[in-house]
Length: 69
Image 1 (cartoon, helix red, strand yellow):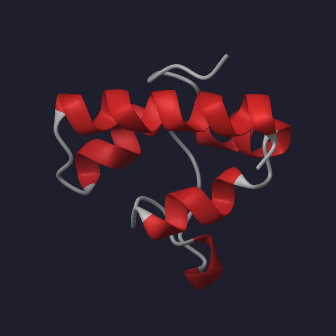
Image 2: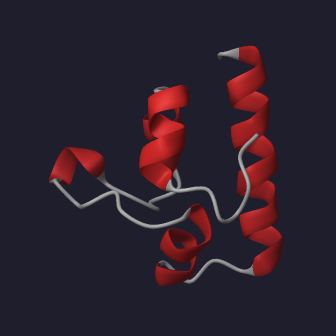
Image 3: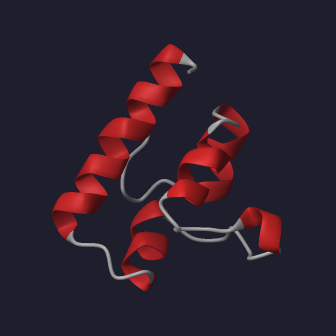
């Protein structure tokens, strides 16, 4: 299960499709070589996302992990 404090590099290994999701949200641009260290919450806060938006990201990433789509 993905949580706010889950390390990005850990859930990317579990859910590779999460890379596209994160790039669409402008959280981490892996294609640009931006490092993927830290937690989802830290990365989202760096981009100015609110608590509600971060909670939505966590839910959507868990849905993505469950469905694989």
